[in-house]
Image (tube, rainbow, N blue to C red):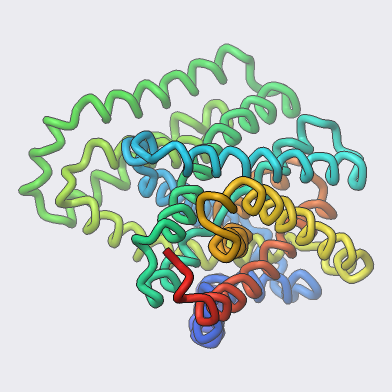
Length: 385
């Protein structure tokens, strides 16, 4: 079988199985991850999945996802959020990092630095999964809805900072192929380009009259430029995120939605299914079956930390019912944490046992949380504000 027939099969399965997942309020893209998990048990197409072409396409999927994460971050909006939301985000992130790092350090025997970096992925929130549910109940603009979405956005910013530390750690501490000077220069150029785009907002207004096709081409060219510069410091992932942040501040506001839709169509229509399949392919299924209790323990710790922090901190502001709903919503994890774990795994920072446990826990929470949250909202809708 050639790669085109193989990709056709992956896309077709993702489409058909994804329609089933959508009925359960689960993102359809997760069907590709599940297919990868199946192939992790037995892979008759290893020649294709181990090829440079497939790896390149998978990496493009990761870069597009990271670009979208950066493009959706509105730094100005975050800075304007009221103190309660910022404090809530900090408390949730701190509690997850504290309990998560203790768990990883003592159970998986990693040093404290890696334990903290991995534990930060516990705090991420898959707010994109929750938006359709919040819209259905018409509570997106409520205090509960805005808190969920704002905390989710804030943790994306934190993940960007985490990526910076990971890149420095990978480039300087593990591979030893790059000097600190080259890494520092590459990162400096990336941040200067991001800042430069934000200062050229007036010039960017000229793109208001440009057709969407050439504007999209400019966006892709800029994204690849950032990725290419980042490659010199093994910071291509960070380059993709910063390209999204920079272009959001540069492109005219009236064209942002159109560009976002174009990028998402290319990302989720072509490259993201390949990336999620690739993620699933790296799972150690035998280890998960033998140590399923570690997956359960990871879910309990990551969700329990969020419930504990949210209820203790938000009960006076939101009430007990809304605090429980907030805790439930914040428990779901999606693409940001998965991408970070994939980067750590590919660079040899974490082994397949920890990688498999974290990814498996994310999959289970993605299945459970939307269903539980929808049911809770039906029962307590009158108490939401």
